[in-house]
Every structure is written in C-alpha cells, then in structure tokens.
Image (cartoon, rainbow, N blue to C red):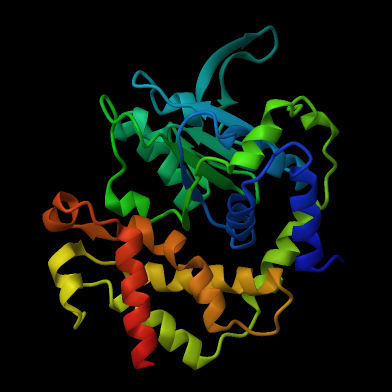
Length: 320
C-alpha cells in the first residue's frame, strides 16, 4: 500500500493538472479527509471551490454531490423522501428516494443561505453518519465528508451557523485570491479536463490511511502544548490580558482533540514518526478560528481572530 506522503503527493499532482495555485487549500482538504472530518470553506465567488472539491473526490475515487443551498429548501431536499408507488403485484407501498446527502463527498454550497431547520438536517448527518426519515434510519456512505462553503461578502438574507454547529467542522479553510502570476496562467487554463483525472486511491485504501494517521504517536509534551493553546483562548482561564479584552468565548475541548488529530495528519503527510510542535502550529488557525467568538471590542477595532490566535501561540511558546 502507498504511504500517506506518496498518496498526498499523487492527489496534489492530479488536482494541479486543472487547478492553478491554492496549494494550501489542497493540503488542508487532504488533512480533513485523512482525519475523517468535515470542513467549512470561505472565499469569494470564482475561486474554484467547487472544482477543487470535485477534483479531490475524483482523485480519491469517491462519489460526489453538490447541493446549492437556497432560502426555500426543506430538509427532504437533502436527505430524501418517501414516495408512494403502485405495482400490479405489490400493490401500493412507500419507497425511499435517497437525497444528495447520500454521497462520499457532499459540497454544501453557501450553507448559510438556507434556514436553520434545513441546515440542521445536514449537520445531523455529519454527526451521526445517518439520516432518519419517517421513523426509518438509513446509513450514509462510508467514508462521508461535508465540505460546506460560505460567501464572506454578502450577509443579507443569510442564516449564519450557530457556534455549536460550527464546532462540528474540523477545519475552517479560507480561500484567498490567487497570486499575480497564477492569475495570469488562469487566463489560458483549460478547466474541462476534470474527467481525465485519475484515481490515486479508493475508499478502502483511504480508510486504511485514516487508521494509520490516528496511530501516529503524540508525546505528552506536544499534548501539553495543544492543551495550553486551546485553554489560552478562554477568557475565564487565560492569564493573558488581550484574551479577556477581545474574546467572548474560547474554544472547547473538542478543539484540543481536533488540533491533535489534524497535527497527526500533517505529520503523516511529511512521513514523520511522531507529531511535533511544528505540526500543531501548521493547523492551529484552521482548527481554532471558527471556534473562537470575538467580543464587541475586537469587532469594533477590527481585530482578526487569526491575529489573536497568533499572539496566544507566541505567549504559550514563551512559557513552555
């Protein structure tokens, strides 16, 4: 079986056949997949979010569905519904028609544009890996990943995800504008080669790699570092003045668990035998950013949560 590093390089090289730039985004998406976690992706329109995720699904030989969220959607548009059928021999009976959530990778496009009731149908599937319709429970495909997108520009008519639901996402991935030379190359790029991408591994091999990732050792020293970083985001526990001044609520215990798990994936992609501090640092912002709630002071002074996380890291490093 291929190593995790070899697999990652193969997946990245395949995706790069049609995607110019966005190396960091591809890396974080692969980390999310290795951890068996979901990701929320934020970026302005036109940055190839759908194309990147679809390409990832093809290189992993996984099924892919895209759901365009709108204000008029209902939960059955996602999960599926029972329909009444009539046959000569069978007579009348109900048959379940599976919704688009029954796929290995589900792109929830602009998830914040649909009401909370519909959002919760997808978020329940994320947590339980199954859906219940009219008392019947249906298992979702294994593996199952949700890649949800948000538009950071327009918030009118949107329904932002509650913090408790945001916490179910392993990573917050921000897609920025391409560099100048990359944008120059995009002009003549051919995005019609999606069908030509080859599968690097399949679902069965991916599950084995996920198991290998979780078995990478993490020393108590690195665990202590992760714990101190997360606890340092909480105003009630942190000794840092700026945390009390700018943060309303810090990250919960799940953040510590996800931070170590994502660091294990990052270490595996570099063929490391153990997780080190640098692996924790590399995934710190994507794991914590959506789990920290800034207060009015931070919002009024336009202080970014990423900057606060960076300052917390510096202070924790100085102590440990």
